[in-house]
Length: 227
Image 1 (cartoon, rainbow, N blue to C red):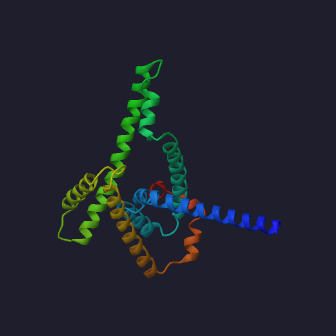
Image 2: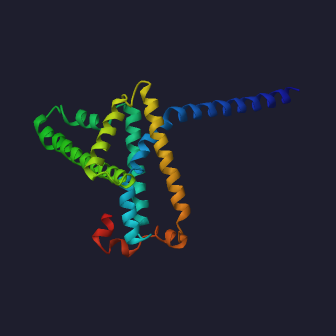
Image 3: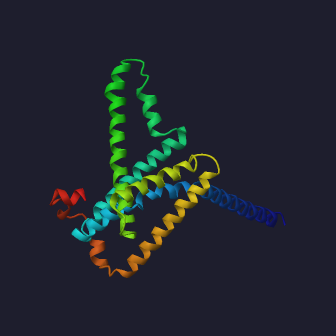
């Protein structure tokens, strides 16, 4: 009898642990899935679609290794940034300022040779990436509504970005949930469109898998690697 009671107690303990672990996973999924979907928009925007379609139409499957390599680098950098934010609670820009703004020695030297050039480079990178998203969204609107001019699409895209940002701070408050649901709906729509398009395309899977293998063709032209 004591042995049976001990076995029953162990089974109950394992069941309790599994139940607690399940609730913990669901809690974190509910809390962080929306933020993850918002971050995933960077890979679903029309700018990326336009570049990928152009590269595919010109080079076929031969640049898929570059896509794979870029994805691995992106995952690595994002994991590092996520760990930094989770541990410290502040973003990378704040870290840069804390590290370089008030140095005990050579303060102005660190500011003018480290912090300020870093800020300028970051702004240039932000503008360069956002320009692709802005033009990609404008082109997408022009494709959906042929009567629109490109500059009309640019203005509409800029307005809807300002409108979404005006819904609330993405880090606090109830409007965040609305923002996350809106982005999730857009991502789901893009995913459905992607599935429909892929289902209608006759993919040569042998060539597609071969594209993930590094080849001399990737480095045969600077334009290939750039795309």
